[in-house]
Each structure stands twice: as structure tokens, then as C-alpha cells.
Length: 205
Image (cartoon, rainbow, N blue to C red):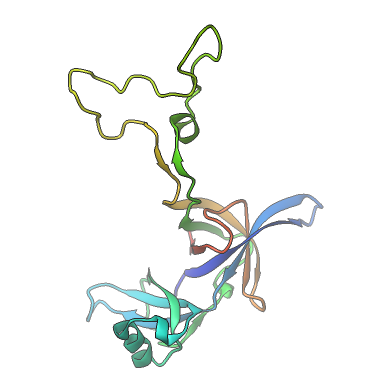
């Protein structure tokens, strides 16, 4: 059984719970994902299921990838991901994985690529409080000393200005509010990484 699915972040909205309180949710277009390959311990050394998501024209694929879809007998997909599974005996190539693997109340983790914010200074990137804005200060938002001067180099891991965002981020402990199998929509309480339209992976915890 696969407890994960590929999806696309649609955006945020709000729904009302049974007691009338407002719940902020992120809408994820989850699936349907199609099983394109099955990994077994006998042939691959581990047990997993490869699934595809998002339609794409065959001319946009390389010949090896297009050949893989043709061998599996499924339509070409834009994204391919592998999910580990203890038992894959009930899975078949061409089988669809839908949002019905989740139920309201399930705890999930969502992985995506965070929004890229470009080159950022130390105050924005690392939340430095900055220096004085008055009394003749000429530093303001600039970073201070780079560390040990005798080493004549900057140590790895020092919090300095640099590229911010655009990294793989996982948010854990989110709660499934609603799973609409007809529309392939998954409503998760809270915010998930990435911009609207970005690819996300939802894993049941």
C-alpha cells in the first residue's frame, strides 16, 4: 500500500469546521498518479513504487524516458517519483493512486521547493536585528565581523548574505481536513512550502 502521493499546490483558502470556527487550509491537486514501475527486493534490492503525475507530450521526453512509459503501457507523465513501501504485492503497473489513501484527521508531511527570494542580506536572511539607525552609525543593516581574523578566511556555515529560498523544505505534522476524490483535491490545515502551482509530495505520517 502506498501512503504518499504527488500533487500540485493550488493555493490557500478557508473552510468552516463543525463548531463554526474558521480553518485555514492549503488546497493541493493530488493525483491521480499512475504507477509506472514497481521495485522489488528480488530484482532491485528494495521495495518501492514509482508513480507519474501530470500529462506531457511525448516529444518533450528523451527517448529512454519515453521508452519506459511505452514499456509500462501508460501515458507519458511530466513528473516521476519513487515511494518506499513495505508490501507492493497489491500494486500493479497502470494502477491509479488517488487522494482516497488519505482521510480527514490524518497527519501528513508535505515536501516542496520553497519560494526563491534571490540574493538577500543578513537581516532578511538570518533575521539579524541590525545596528543603530542614529548617532552617526554607518553600519545599519550590514553584517558585522566575519569571525576570527587570524584564520584569514571565512568559516563554513557562517551566517552571511547569500541566496535565499529555492530549497527543498518539508513541513511535518499537518492535518488533512478534507479529501475530495471526485475532484482530486486534498485540503490540508496550514501552509505548505512553495509557490502556487509548485510540485509537492504528501506523505502520511
